[in-house]
Every structure is written in structure tokens, then in C-alpha cells.
Length: 227
Image (cartoon, rainbow, N blue to C red; front, side, top):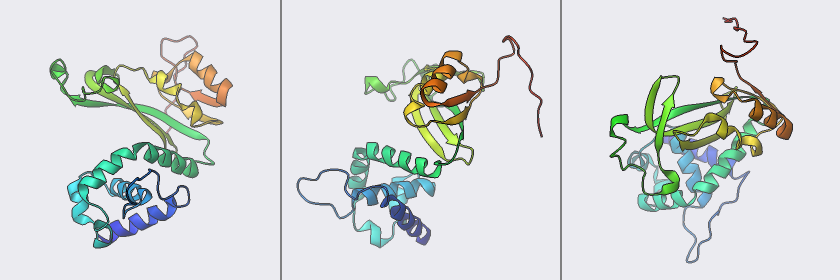
């Protein structure tokens, strides 16, 4: 409990330097827990690996729990999701301010067995967020769900995280990162190999995309393994 409160206060202290307390407009009354305090609590839970709201509210100290109920916390946190993403980006930019090497990768997020995909109704309420069928080359298997894309610094601080349907090709994600990073070297595997995207990134925002060559490409040279 003390560890949770200490981390919450420290995160809140950092957030107050980059954002204002109230991020949403309130017509009736100002809530006891400010928007920034709620975001700090959400980030604290993520930092401590608490992925259950029930577990989180069992561990909350009285100095925090009296300010908000669980149902209200859940509802307001959903409304603050865009502000939360904006704060994440500000924090990442702060930690990665002087970093010039980043790694880009993706991973499959399977929501059900591939054989059940035809009758699955998971995440089908909104047409813009429909899951899809995709192929994971690393695991040599097809799956049904989404693809998680991420860019992080060599120190492990994520600069960008995004979701897409499983069928979206990795290079399409690179088209969206030009507003987030620039003047750096981006390292990726062969799934990000594209001469057109590589040239566009370099010309528009000075991003040097480094990917290994495929074995069937012209002038291919096998790289020596360094230990």
C-alpha cells in the first residue's frame, strides 16, 4: 500500500509539470479527484502491474479511495483516454529527448482461436475496430485479432504504441510515425523493408530506416553474428 501511494505521488508530481489538473469540462461540480490525479492513479496501476480494478481499489489507501468510487473511476478513465495518450507522448518525448536510435516491431494479439474466428463476436460492436485475420512470420502461424505496433528507444522507453487489424502490413504503421519522431535511426526487421517508405522517411523527417536484406535480394550479404 505504501509503495502504491509513494509511486502515485511521484507520478503525479511529474504530471503536474507537463499538464493542467482538469482536462475535461464539468457542468455541475468539480470532482474530488482531479483528472490529472485519476490519470496518475491509472499510470501507477500499470507501473505496478495491477491489471484488475477490483485489486487496485482493494489496495488503495484511504487518502485516495475516499475521492472516487470504482464505477466513476472506470467511466472517467474511458473519457480521458485521448488525454492519457497525449500525456504518454509528452513523457516519452521527455525521456527520449536526446535519443537518436529507436527500434520498431510488432506482435500478434490473438483474441480467439483461429478456427473460431467465423463465429466470434468479440470486438464487433464498432465497424472501425473490427478484428481481422493475419499471419505472424515469427511464429509461422495464422491468427485472428489485432497487431500491436511499437517504437521504443534503446533504453526501453516506448515512444509510440498503436493497434491495427491483424491484416494491416507493418510498413503502413511507419507512415504514421513522422509526426512523432524525427532526426534519428530506426531499426526494424525485414517486415519493414520498403525502399519507397525508407526514402520518404528520410526526405520528410530525416529518419534513417535500417532493416536487414532478404536472402533473395540483389547484393545480399549475410551479416556476421557478434557475441
